[in-house]
Image 1 (cartoon, rainbow, N blue to C red):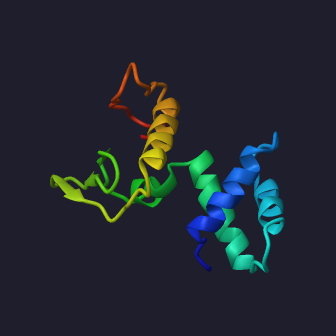
Image 2: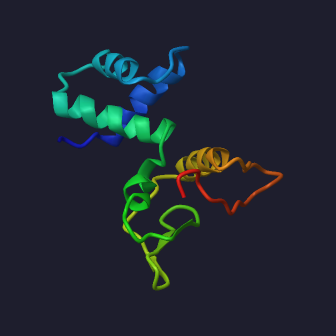
Length: 131
């Protein structure tokens, strides 16, 4: 599958933010197809996957969290992701693009765990619903 260019994902994200529609696969595809240019099926699927992970899943951490044996994932800002697979923390090959992305991801994951993350509670330690 073709990767999704970050600039294209950002434009689609902005288009969806200006809409009242829930970001379903259909609305993401429609927003993408409204962007100039010809987009392959692979690009459409990649953008849908990126935005689904951002809105419902664990974003760039999703693949890491689904690995067997992963016991902990620590995110300490941009380029600061570490994973424990049972033998101590090690750097993970996951890179977050901006402080804004880190904040959105952290707030979404905290909410999924029934916690909050904001200026009044600037850090969180939580267990996600699926373990």
